Amino acid sequence: MKYDFDELIDRTRTHSVKLDKLPEGAGADVMSLWIADMDFGCAKPIIDALHRRIDKRIFGYTLYDNEEIKGAICSWFLRRYGWNIEKSGIFFSPGIVPAIAFLIKIFTEEGDGVIIQRPVYYPFTGKIESNKRVVANNPLIRQGNTYVMDFDDLEKKFADPRNKGLLLCSPHNPVGRVWTEAELLEIVSIARKYDKWIISDEIHCDLTRVGIKYTPLLKIADDYKDRIVACTAPSKTFNLAGGQFSNIIIPNPEYRKKWTTFTANELSVTSGCNLFGMEAALAAYTEGEEWLEQVREYIDGNIEYVNKYVKANLPKASVCTCEGTYLLWIDLRGYCADHKKLQHIMIHDAKLVLDEGHIFGEEGFGYERINLATPRSNVVECMERLKKALA
Image 1 (cartoon, rainbow, N blue to C red):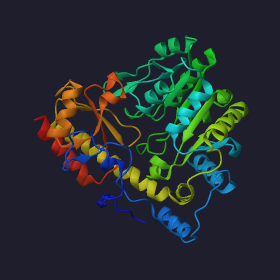
Image 2 (cartoon, rainbow, N blue to C red):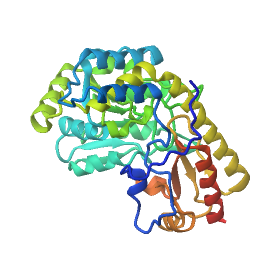
Image 3 (cartoon, rainbow, N blue to C red):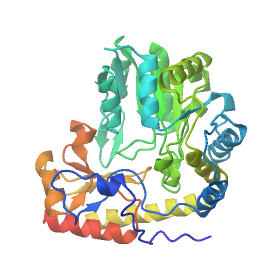
């Protein structure tokens, strides 16, 4: 089956966060390329599965802890990445951000430090601080048009007894790095030295550029698995965020008990899930690969287009190399280093609603994050608006 990702699907009147939750001052003529969902239609097997489920006509409480969905999750990661996941270690969360909040509460006390690597997905900071924990920033280092980790500083952060563990973004959002096996093993080596846990957010794992290899942290760190929790979901991969369905991989039996106790007693989300989210995930993991490979290729084309456009038309801008995700991290400091002024230019002059770099930490001042999981015509229009505004 050949999918048409050039199709412009009307998302109005669908209560879309992307379209309806706009910053103050944004007019009706803005183009929204911010929050990380796609403007592509879902894979046909997913649509068909949802129709079949609707035809059952009863939408009662739905059990996540079943062999069919867990078997599909295990099969997906085993055949694509060689990662052997135990079914007994898979737990439900309505999303990875809620799961991170749960885990922070389970693993830490108020006042404890949690290490993050800015510029990084902004809910990391939000969930740490809203739970009265402390951000310990281990900022990434920009080298040319890519980023690397500061392992010397990371060791200092791990060595501090106030810091209990690392919240890792792998692949990294927004800078687009897909961490190599060597980099991941170095993290584990340092964490082991100081006996610290790692929560690894791997939600973008399936959306690497063609030819780039994603390495599951738990696959290569089996001897440290009792101190690692991995968070995965079909939501970014298959555009299913509204299904509120994520998989939290917990190898440690003690951590499993803590998770189950916390989610069951305090949150009542231990077994029940969104039934449409589960049906969509099941179809995605069993029949969605054809769609995924086509969408990856299309996104690669969008990224290539932007790279060429910026090089030809925006000489004072630079695009960071995107190895994974469909989010492009672009440096506009050559045009405007003042992040407040830059945001004003985006909204009022370019008529673009992007994710402003400053929300990812001060390391993002002067940057913009652009969502390129959208038809090529939107990408072309976005870049034309950007060029005109910055001129």
